[in-house]
Length: 289
Image (cartoon, rainbow, N blue to C red; front, side, top):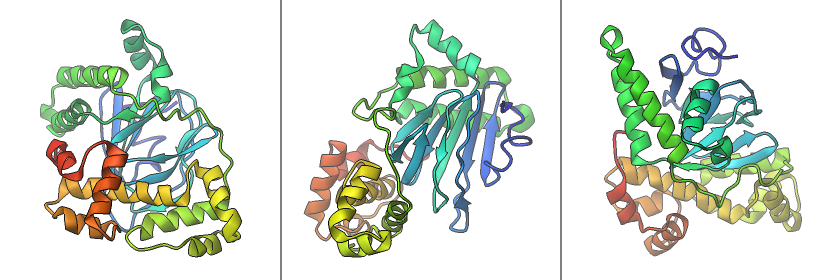
């Protein structure tokens, strides 16, 4: 069992050695340190704590038991107690926040709210409240000897309640489909993740996977649950979200940076994916959390 308070010094040293860590007796937060040189290693594991993973860049190979799915920016992904989970393959340029919550602590709050952990079968929308609670927890922890332990306990409780009551994306059940997976498809997905801002032809992807052009599309969809084109669009939209939240680039510039030839195509694809146009998404985004 991973002890929450001592995770960084004991079991979690290898997993979180490239992270800043913050904790109290019930919750442990690890925030990756941005670096082009850091490689996020394959990290399939299990433990008694509940785990919540927040991608700050697209993560195409999250695993929960036998399911493999795409970690999208703007959502929080849940892993229940004692399940095999993590990142399937080593990836570069991955940024994330990872959160461990003590099993008996979280289940006590679930019992109080009269619900089961079935609420964690779905991605949770990363709401303004969740961002705020994480921000003020870290802010309080960084006061070092002056930090208020009671305040950290209160913030932990509010954060867990928001997780349980949060907006769920029930269109994606991460236990619904047990997907087969091939190494060649991983190579293509990783290639897309690094070359999303240019035109990528189906012939190029099929060759990289070592498959025929006719078979490649079906194999890719069987492995990841979507076509190569829709996967590429997901990567582009996720990258666009980061630029909209963290820069003042014009929509036209963002469109070009993420690989769309026309701003109109960017706008229509972004709305289809998120339900709002890019300018509206930028208005609703909160920086610094």
